[in-house]
Image (tube, rainbow, N blue to C red; front, side):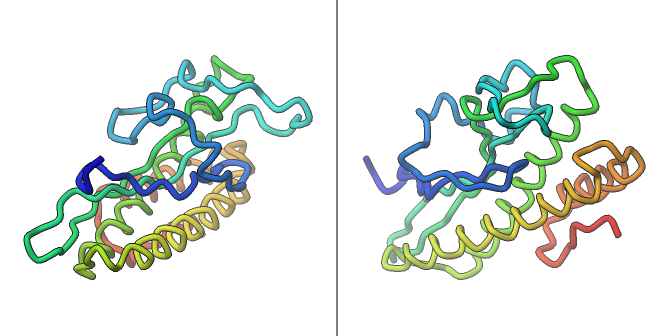
Length: 189
């Protein structure tokens, strides 16, 4: 496997439940769907609902994937970061509820915003091969930041139940996806 195709998979993050699973649990790449494939659909939620979880109608497992896009002659690395959705871990009980699907989509969109921030930060640093640990630490940092925002999003929207707050978050996230401004804050308050 060449450096150009090497993917840093340091674990994905459970968006709705705010848990982290280890790389050993990562599924084959066909189960990981990048954000740029378009909006989510219920058919992609292939995981089984957790029997003990009676609070959630759906759970989105998403996180940040990091690839080396290029290494130039001098060893400078160009990174590509993007949100991925784990079809095999994400689940739903509510296959017809479009409001819930929109809520889950925003979880995925938030992960994409943080992936873009990570990509910009890493490429601004002009890292070399020897800096792989720096890239991993930054990926972990950005994943933790997006998890904090995911928790705030669920708390403020009451997991999508508060329609007015959900609408404000939709506007914030949409604007965040349109801008590549690392200082843009995702808070509905």
